[in-house]
Image (cartoon, rainbow, N blue to C red; front, top):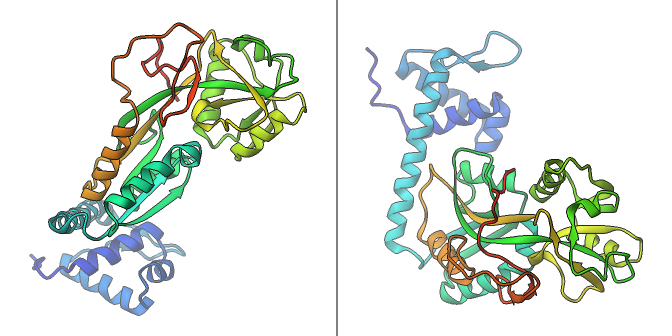
Length: 335
């Protein structure tokens, strides 16, 4: 039997990079090493194991059966060591380091800045890296260990993602003040089936949620325009073009020249949540940031007396709007 004790962490990292790219040049470029160095370290690893990890017989390389089995253990070993090093760093927690956060567009736009400012005042030595991205990318980067914390909508798409709900909010109809529905106190979802709508592009969770609510009622939305820009949705609704949009209350700009009308039968809602990776260590900085978020926003599970429909009340973050509920509706929100 070959002696496996000589295997080095560097060799495992090189093996994982090649397994990810299935290309020696790309793996070398990713690791900032030369291709001969990469090939030499892989050859040493295979010599230690006494088995080939890659099949190089064709035009493209691929993992052998041995390589596929070994990959899971190598990945686990590297991840566990990274978690151990992060845990050691916690001994000097919140006095240095970096916090990488991925945030959905609507949350980034209005709700996040006060929390970021509070965190920076409390922990000035932590370097924050806050990036706006869509929920699938947030989950992917959490799973890869590239993000420490995500803020997006539920349900998650990956089993590896752990969720802590922050708050629930309604989707509201937004129209120009001269629109035929602008004076309504509320509108049924069915009333919107023939209205030309401006919606987020298909990559966004809110778009899928809107389409699902229509589909559950046997309706098809009349989509006049798709965009990934919330500001354009608001501007088009207020421009007198006769179009409408559905937006979460937290994303609605209170200074825009639009009318905001509650929707019912059903009341479309979405849940904003903290997203964590189940496989990676939670740093002290990420935990502290999450605590600030939970303190600022009402917990999803918190019991609260219902107000009559149409009553004014506080939104998460201090805004006021019409008929906001933080408790779950009768039916679950699904993707």
